[in-house]
Length: 101
Image 1 (cartoon, rainbow, N blue to C red):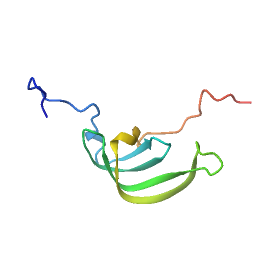
Image 2: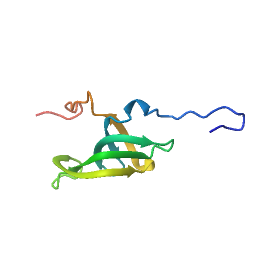
Image 3: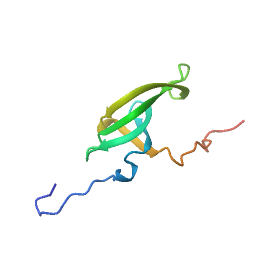
């Protein structure tokens, strides 16, 4: 893809290093899933395989529970993607902004 001057446009996000690796994706509205990245485009539409959705806690809609459901092969629309992170090397840390009593 080239602009009017003939320069090639570069993607803002380069996900090539995550192809065929498991990633976690967060969406507008709070949904989260993880899967193996099989493909993507410049609009950040993602193709994930072996996808698992993390379900929300029924008592607190902002909290993710330990419950999951398998989705299989999915296409994630790029306009709803908020965050993409690799699962390899990821760990949860305590929120530093929460007041501990």
